[in-house]
Length: 332
Image (cartoon, rainbow, N blue to C red; front, side, top):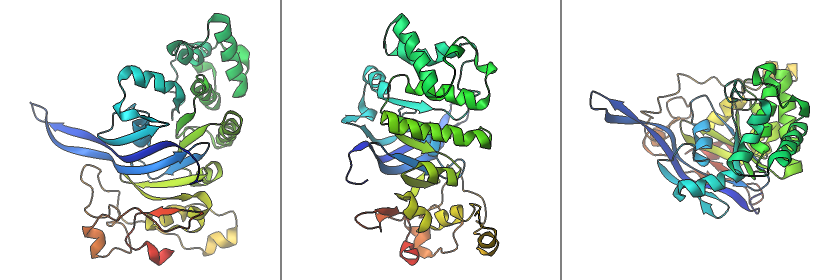
């Protein structure tokens, strides 16, 4: 995968939200939602991004698409630096980058019909005309497994899974190259989750899509992703091929996350060691010094409290394995 062309290249991306207080709204601090992440997403791959709630996954996805303006860093898409584009240039570029939102109940306008919702991106980017546009909407509904005669129905007439399919159809309307899927299955029933994930996987093959797939469900991320990035408190702590990362985790936080995945074998499940993290996630407005994870890590030494660990590659030429831990060699 590392020999392929990078579609997205993120360098030192930061997104800090100011904390304002007092009558004169003076800034007294900042919530460091994303605090210096760097990674590439290769053309045609799915990069899974996992971590606890509040670690900065969704903010990273929105900052890549410039739905949130980054505080610092660059995001390159093809040959463009998205952070330096004007509003008009960014509007043109958005045709090639779309987003599937987390909540299918909140992301669809209840006053618009399904046909209007799916055709809206076509109108915004001036793609097609009347009859041609209507045909495109019907085709999109067919692609995501919905009846094309549903165009005049409203969102409240659909189930959660069907609504998310409408969201997927909307994201495909402009023939994008890259899609950020922000926890697209977390609001759905378990039985529906597999259908939506399989649909996304099929569309990736058929349409040559590239995904950033943000999720909590570690087993689902392994199923759909080519590589996986693990985030903790605004930073990426580990990034590798999915099988390499799941079979040989090098960061204590990744090890703790993976130990929570239930095993289908009852005997192995009964005998394995579960890693339970102590304490709560620190506040992103006041993260710990050094390694952000040192307050909950059982391998902490003095260097962990003082120095921010370098994000380094401990893998092979064929399978890079990036990790930010001072003691990662212990686990390799």
